[in-house]
Amino acid sequence: MMSTERARETAEAQGAMARLALGFTAWAERWFPDSYVFAAVALVAVAVGALVMGAPPLAVAKGFGDGFWSLIPFTMQMAFVALTGYVVASSPPAGRLIARLAAVPRTGRGAIAAVATISMLASLLNWGLSLVFSGLLVRALARRAELRMDYRAAGAAAYLGLGATWALGISSSAAQLQANPASLPKPLLQISGVIPFTETIFLWQSMLMAVVLVVVSTAIAWMSAPAGEKAVTAEEMGVALEGAGSALPREKLGQAAGEVQAKRPGEWLEHSPVLTVLLVLMAVGWLGQEMSRQNPIVAISNLNTYNLAFLMLGLLLHWRPRSFLDAVAKAVPATGGVLIQFPLYGAIATMMTATKGADGHALSDRIAQLFVGLSTAESFPLLMGVYSAVLGFFIPSGGGKWIIEAPYVMQAANDLQVHLGWAVQVYNAAEALPNLVNPFWMLPLLGVLSLKARDIVGFSFLQLLVHAPLVLFMLWALGQTLGYTPPVMP
Image (spheres, rainbow, N blue to C red):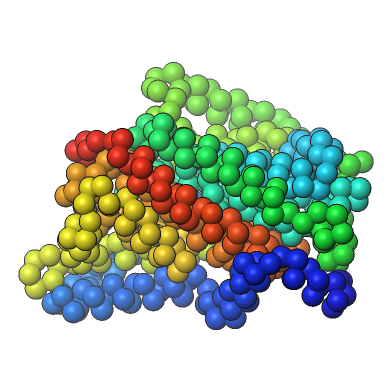
């Protein structure tokens, strides 16, 4: 471990902003409860709000029960996004790719910039893939002692996919939900209609924002990374790079657990690629039909299609079912928060939209009226962005929080005649901001890196200081280039 004197020198070198971030994280780790508690508090607050508006207690209870299981399909879909990303990232071919990528950088700062770019680009495909793949890449780079790479700054760079770009990519919970009418709660569907990817993540305004964030975030990661003697390596932090969380050593790359010879006849199929080949061939045949009969963008916007493609890719990359199943078992804990919290979000959404007060209006109507009263079509993206970012500190779930916000946000967007797809992207870009300092989504990455949140948040806080004004400005400026289109019902 680092000596007390070295730790003091490191803290001084980080500057006032990083010390502030370290203080914030220490406070958050001490006082912030689990995110489930925030979801439960939000549910109670909505119930109290409905009662204050004059809703009968039995109506509030009915809204709770009716909505509790309303998001089961979407809950399972989001759990599979996390699971499939982990499985793909931990496959033997991914390990070989990590080894090749880790051999490229020539300096510690260059390595950190590379991690930042790869993390953000991977997150546009799958946020789970981004976390695990980037974490394993950091560990592989840390083994190159000649780089003298700051391990904390590299960890923060690996987290940029979740803190900058993931919600602008195809695993965006809000965009996926709005593109899938079968997953949308009926009250929300009646307000927003179906919004395809072409009106959300594939808008040129959204893609431009993603490009800007990748370039700016990579530059900040490079400039803020300590170099030379100021860099703190994994070894100096006492991190064992060949432990359970590490990638496979170079000499064992490609030797997956599933490649061990079966010891009993019953294990033969577990260690044979026969079933893998048959399953993947059937999946490829089905996916080919889906892509040929409709626009590929429309096809991949279906969460079931997206998850099937990633699941089969993970199976193919692991090659043998035993290796695949071992990876799935390791990925399951990352889905726990989704499985236990999304029923509460479903209950909240139903209570907000279906439980009427004494005047015949739901709580979502009242909040929508407040948004309309405080903003115009021009200022709505800025106001909503600030609101969504602040709420994200307390409800760190992209899909779950959208279920809560969407009914009144989309109603307000309709009333003000704001482009509905852009309203979704405003939410997406702003929702990612608090991820930069919120420990909740850091947990899978921190497990891979053997770090604590306080080790990386000083660097991610610097990113937040730049991202917040930049993102809010882009949301406002780019929003002026889009016009309103009425909701499209399925």
